[in-house]
Amino acid sequence: MRLGLIQSAHVTRNKGQWSSIKGGTVNIDRPGQEVIERTSIVVDRYNIEVRLTAALPAAGRKIVASVAKRMFLETIPQLVSQALLYTSVDSQAMTKLVECTEDQEFLRSHLLGKELVCFIGDGSILPRKNGISDLPLVSDKTVPFTSPDSMRVSFVLPNRGRVTGMGIPRGVTLISGGGFNGKSTFLQAIEHGVYNHVPDDGRELIVTVSSAAKIKAEEGRYICNVDIRPFINNLPFGKDTRQFSTEDASGSTSMAASIQEALEAGADALFYDEDTCATNFLVRDGRMQQLVSQKHEPITPLISRIREMWDVHRVSSVLVVGGCGDYLDVADTVIDMYQYTPSDVTARAKEIAERMPINLATPSTQYGSVIGRAIDIPVDLTRYKPPQAKTRWSIALFPSESLVKQSNTAEQNIGCTDEDPNSSTGWKNDLVDTEMQSTALDVSAFDQLVSISQTRTIALIIKHIAQSTDHMRLSEWLSLIDIMDLDSICTGRNKSGNLARPRRIEVAMAINRLRYARMWQSKQE
Image (cartoon, rainbow, N blue to C red; front, side):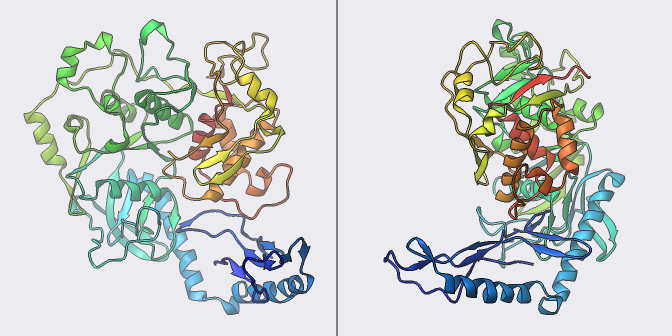
C-alpha cells in the first residue's frame, strides 16, 4: 500500500512571483523493497491509522483558505477512498504481499533448525538496477540464481509450497572467484536477507538469520572501552587493549572493535568483503611472520581466530576473498562464483590446502568471553535540540555549549571511562580530543541500514537513552528497545509517521560511534 507525494489539483502555480501559491502537497513515508515495521500506517484489529503530512497552500505569508478547504475536504478524502478501502485496492496483490512476508518469516525461523546461515532460492535475482537503487536489475543478460546440487536444500513454505535453493551452512564459508563474477553482489544480497522483501523483488527468497552483521574497516572511527585483546595486544608503551579507546581508529583496530561490539549486540553471523577490510587484520603470510616475529606483532589476524569464533562461540563467518588463499585452511565451505553462477569447490579447496600447506600462527591466548558495557549518554546532548536524521547516512547532533566545552577540557574525558559515572572517582584523563567539533554522527558504514526512517528512529533512541536516568548495559538497552513499540520511543513528542524499526545491530553500531557517549565495562559479568 503506497501513497506518494501528491500536488493538489486545486493549486495553481505562478513561478517566480512572491504571491504565487506554494504548498498544497500531501506526503507519506514511502517504503522501499524491504518489508519493515513502520509508523506511516498502523493497523490494529479495528482501525487503519494513516499518518501523513499536509503542506498548507500559501501565498506570501498567508494561508489560502479556499484551497486549503478543498485540500482537506476533497483531496484527502479522495486519497482515503482510493488507497484505504478494500474495494479500491488490488486484493490479490495485497494477499500476495502478506503471504510472501509470511513465507519469509517461516524460512528465517527454520534456518537454524537446518544449521544454515542463509538460504538463496533458485531463480532469485541478486543484482540491483544500479548502485543507488534497490530495485531488481531487469535485463536479458541477468543471470537467475541456481544452486549447486551439493548445496541444494528445500523448504515447504506455508503459502508458496516447496522451494529449493542454496543453503549456506553455519561455520566458516568462503566466497571466491575471479573479479567481476558476482562475489560482492552475492554478499550484498545475503547481507540484506536479514529483511523481508516485497513480491517480485528478486530477493524475496533470499533469507538470512536476523542477527547477521557486516564488518568492515572504518579508519578514523571512535572506540570506547572495548576489549579487543583477542585481536590486538601488546601495543607500544603498554597501551591497554582490555579497555581500548581511541578517537581515531586504524583499519585493523576498527575491525577488531566492530567484531567485539557486534558480538556484544548479539550477532551470531559475521560477513566480510576482502575489498573493504584491512589486509593486515585479515592475514599475515609466512614471509611476514618470519620478517616480523609474533612477539613484536600486536595484531592477531582474523584467520587465526575465525575457527575459534565458530568452534567455541558458535559465531559463523562468511567471507568474500579473491587474494587471501590462506583462508582455505580454515574454511568449512568454499563457494566459487563464475559468471554469476556458484559452484561448490570445497573438496578441491581442501585438496589444495593439503598440497600447499601454510604456517598458520597459533594465538598465544584463548579468545575469551565478550565483556559487556554499561552506557550513559549525557542529557546535554539533547537539551538544545534532539538528534535529527538529515540523510540515511548522517544524524545531526546539537550538544549544549557546556557539553562541547566539557569534551574539549583536558581535565575530563566525556567520551570514555572505565568507571561508573555515578562513582566518586570521576573520569579518567587518558583520552581527550581537544579539537572535536563534529556535529554529526556518521552512519555511512552501516551497509545493512536501508531506510532514512530507520535512521530517524536511531536518532530518537539516542534521545530516549540520553533522557533516561537508568545506566543499564548496552545489551539490556537493546533488548528493551526491541520490545518497545515505535511510538513509545518518541519521548516527549507527538506520534510520528516517518519512523521504521532498525535492527538492534545498527542501533548498537550507532551508539558505539557516538563520541559523546560514556561507556564502562560492566561488573556484572
